[in-house]
Image (cartoon, rainbow, N blue to C red; front, side):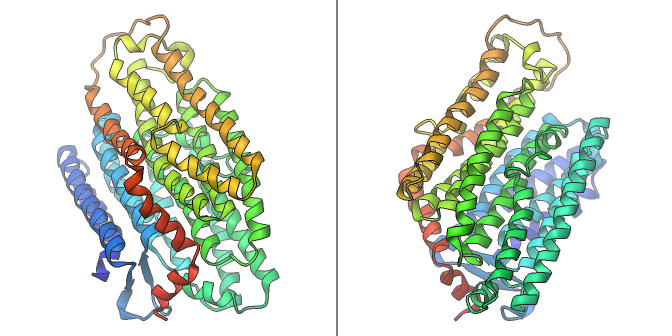
Length: 493
């Protein structure tokens, strides 16, 4: 049973290698990619059910007992995020043939797509801080290939900035790990958590914690380290933008959640208070960016930043309702951001432009696309009874429990402005004067819409089925508030 923990990493890794051999045969690549993605998704669902039924699944690779070997830890948080990742991957693999040209598919898209999923799953499942760095590099190397897929000048320009930022943060990451190893003598996260309680060098540990936070905040695009994200995430193909927006920043915020609920929990009054203000500023500046542009792709890309702010807000509050809200909102945002990137990809495809000023009247030609966007706007903004509402309600409850009235006001205003930023696309792009659309040979729009409807169904289920889903989410937040549960399960004390 313990081998289940490695399957979400191994299956996409082997799948990527296999489809690479069939890269030039697009039909075979598509069939194999869809088949392997379905298998991996089923494995992820089964792993999650095992974790919630029988408890955390630990794999000590090579029979090296923790903390001496590489350990994979499929605890409730990791399992849920791996399952969500594979739901997104499933939607993406069926969206890709419609969003990509055959030439782009032949340039090893499916291989790098699988390597990205493998890296993301590994980052969620690893119980070792150094291997978190390794899996970061795996997913980043795959993202470097995907961001330049197509080889356009604007992609190459933005990719240089993207690579340099991530290279710098990776250097800081491995440096921080080296410092931490020098202080506590281990890179196993459970043993680090155990030893930081015994080490008296709290000043050095706090400095290392801040350094790690800087690394993860850069990857998560928190204020003020988000400047690299918006344009880097809109230059690739829509399916690549969706994978980036849904997964890459979420690995960064997951790392903050994991490290600052397990290891650096001895100075919560200092670190987590800073987190709250960073969250508030991320909300404000992110939504300002979304309101400042008429580029539909940029509007969605900027909306990644306030979402990360909402998740960070719960981590900063660090109580049960707030952490439950962060986890609920994290899952919700991974799904809805993918759907929104898919939707704007379809809008740009049918309109021939990403400029809202040049659109209008699309509802006459594409009513289903328009109404899917309308529903997505309400899901993203947190209008009841959708999933965003449940997450935000829990976050606000956690903030009020800590008497943080200012951030409650900021969160509510940000939610309204997020709704306005997406509705602006609906109003300006779909209503108004009907623009003449040149008849061209286009792929059937149903291929774009089915993956969107698939993802929205999960978002709606998270909202209307909250009564049944929330107990599982609450159990994760309880688990995070008791680090000894993680330590005991890994070290078997």
